[in-house]
Length: 272
Image (tube, rainbow, N blue to C red):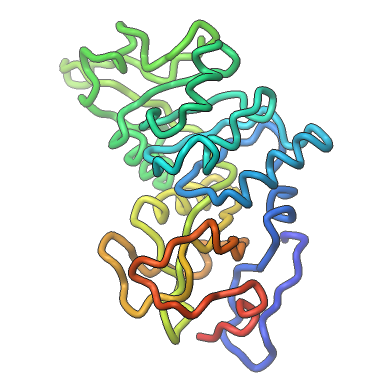
């Protein structure tokens, strides 16, 4: 069990499975050497991880895995994690929105891989299904092909994550699976129901974490609650979320959401 108390009121059923926490408390649950899948990370959560590393060198040696990330500038999101020692390895789909992590990779200070976004998303799906990896013809003959580097971005990156195989005589690439210890996701709540909504990709990440026995840390990525389900989002069972963080207003944007703010205190009173 996670060492955080639940704030569910008595007389409400079923009791929700997630527990509320501050960013600092959530950062304390992430151990050194773990693999973290990132669907969305708030500035507050990223700063909490950096502060914990600066104070006690814990956590350290993280592996960050993501397919896409928003281009929110050098001083936001994943860019805030660009500290040697805090991050050991990055497996990314889109590298252009993360120039600070790019700089670490270019300086040979972290291990770095660039894999196709679609492959990474499907790899999460196959990890969730308990498969050893993802088999695909995508990337054959490109930079991702192990004959051309296997997606490795610098000399420090030695381990091969991609193998050339020939099932049924045809060439294909096998992208090796690995356990996902933590997922950092952005979520919202549906108006009047407290149902959790997230993207299809985030749901797949959460399912991969469940298969791996890890924890799912969700952050509110918008102001207020949703009157209707936006395109590209799905309602998920609350059992997919372990920890919920009420992100700062600066971390969120109001598109497709009502203007009533959701604070950490108000999370205690969400009902089903």
